[in-house]
Length: 104
Image 1 (spheres, rainbow, N blue to C red):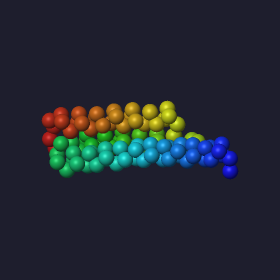
Image 2 (cartoon, helix red, strand yellow; image 1 turned 90 degrees about the vertical axis):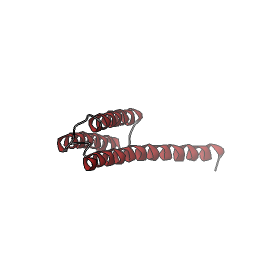
Image 3 (cartoon, rainbow, N blue to C red; image 1 turned 30 degrees about the vertical axis):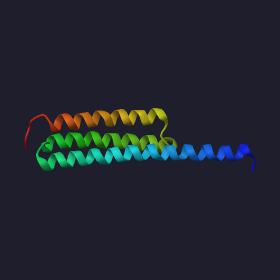
């Protein structure tokens, strides 16, 4: 095998790993945020209505991720950035709702 062929295989493997890692990051964030919502309900920091709204936003993000992944089989840089932006906004909303002083 030539040096160019070996280099091409190495680059392809690296890109595949980076794509899988970033997908894992998005899924990990979704799981952590879901756990934060559940913890907020258990402790009384979130009302049932607040939790329902947050879970609905969470479901919208998950559906958006599904559409992106099933469009061409992978997440592009813009799609990944869009999901991270949505997850950042959801994280801020969870924090705001958990600390707004309402009790269930």
